[in-house]
Length: 511
Image (tube, rainbow, N blue to C red; front, side, top):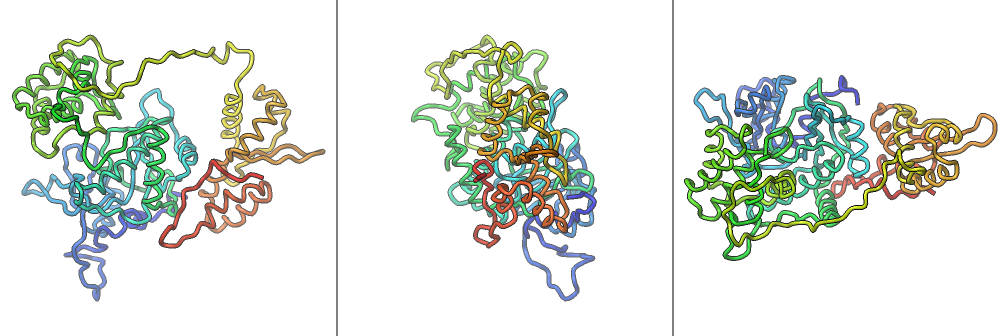
C-alpha cells in the first residue's frame, strides 16, 4: 500500500486497540462537546530521537489525540500499552514505567532486524521468510539500521499478575520463537526488549502495511508450541530456570563459561559484556553471594577483557542493578542467548576457575561432519540447488501487476544449466510443495508461464483495492490451481471468534 495513502491516525488506532483514551482527558481540542471523558485507560511512551530514548528522555502519552498532535515528530514509541507512565524529575523530561511488570495489554509482536555493514537483507527477503512461515506481517518499517516487522494481534492480549505474570511469559515464548524463526536466515536482534520500545510508523519509514493481516493470539501460541517441539526448544515455564536442590546458580557451568571467556565484546544485535556481567551477577545474587564478592569477580572478569573492558562505573551499575531485587535469578532466555554467542567453543583459555562440582549447562555432543565438495568442484548439482536457482531466477523476473514470467523451457535450461528432464521434475515438485505455479502452452507462440507463491501473495497485497478483484480473476485465468491460495486470503471467515487462520502456504492442493 502506498505510503502517501496512509493515515497515521488510523494506523496508530489499529495498533493501540483502545488501550488509550481517544481524546485528552483535559484541554482536548478535538473531543466533541457532548462526549464525556472516557475514564481511566493506559499509557504509552514517545521519544523524539534514539539518543533521547537511550536516556529515557521522553513523553508519557495517555491519548491518541496526543499522538495526532505529534505526527511524524517521534522516532520511537511503545506500541504495547502500560498501566501508567510517570516522570522521574520535576521538569517532566525523563520517563519511567515501561517495564514488563507494568504492562496492561500486548497489541503487537515486533522483530528488529539489524543489517550490519557487509550483510544483505531487503524487505523482499523479509516477505519471503514471512510467507514461508505462513504469517504475513501487518507492517514493515525501514529503519536507519535495518527493518522492524510488526505482527499486530486481532485483539489485545491483556496482562494479569496471576501466576507470576504467566500471561507475559506465554507472550514472551511466542515472541522468542518468532525471532528464532526469522534469525535462521535474517540478522535478527535477539537481545532487545520484547514488549518495550520500537520504531514508530511515520510517513517516511512505512515500507509495507497490510491492515487486514492481524492474528489471533491462540493461533500464534499454537504455532509457537509446534515450533518449539520441532526445534527442541525449552519454552519458558511459569517459574524461571530452577536448579536442582542444594545447587546454587552461580556454580552452574554456564557461569564458568562466561566468566573465563576473554573475547566477549559488545556488538549491535548481540548480547555482550554488559549483559554477561548483569546475568552472572543475578546468578550470584540468587545464590546468596554478597554484592562485594560479586563485584570483585565481575571486576576481575572485566579486567581480563583487556582493551575491550568496560568502564568501572558500568560494571558497578550492572552489579547494583542485579542486586536491586527486581529479579530473583538469571533468566534462561538470556543464558541461552549468551551461551549461543560466547559459550565453550568460543571461550579462550580460562584465566581463573575456582568452582568445584559445577552443575552442567545443556551441551551438545561432539559431532563428525562429512564436508561435501564445493559446487564448483562437482560435475553435477543437487536437486535442491537447482530448485534454489530457479526460485532465485524467478524472483528477479516478477513485478507488481504481473507476478509471472513467460519464457520457454529451453531458455531456462540454457540460462540455469539444468538438464531438461531434471527441470521437469523440479517444476513438478515445487508445484506440489506449493512454492511455484506454472502453466504450459503448446505450439507457436506458446511457452511456459511461471510464478512463485511469494510473488502472487505479495502482489495481491500491493495492488489497489479497486482493482484487486480483476487482478485475482486474471491470476486464476493463468493459474487456476492457485485458487486455494487466493481463497485463503480473500475468503477467510471474519467472525469474531476466529477471524484469521494461519495461511498454510506450504501444503496447497495444486492439482
